[in-house]
Image (cartoon, rainbow, N blue to C red; front, side):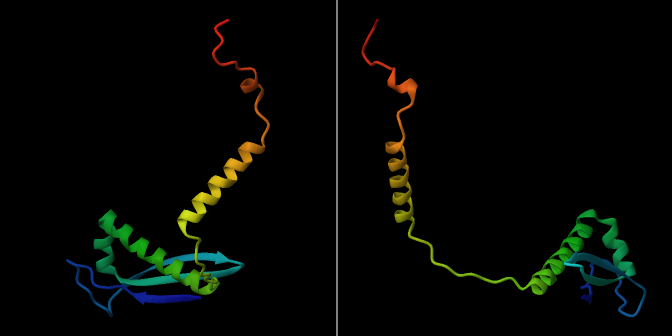
Length: 120
């Protein structure tokens, strides 16, 4: 699976859609199948992009997002919808379980041997 998308305009760079270009490509293999996305960029524009680390990182990030979208489309995950319990019920249920657990545990030895109020 591969797609080739032309890039948008790069400011301060001449754009010639019929001139020489470079191709940015990102590929990942999932279950033995390669998924590749590509972006075609005018060579002169790429020179401007390549000189600016932030701009280059933005272009690479965009390519990663396109690759992620292609992966999601390929894997077609199931979307599950559920309605969570109201927060008040969840908290009070958790407190009740914690209280019951503490009441059912034997008292630790160091607590049993403690005598309050004795000054020996």
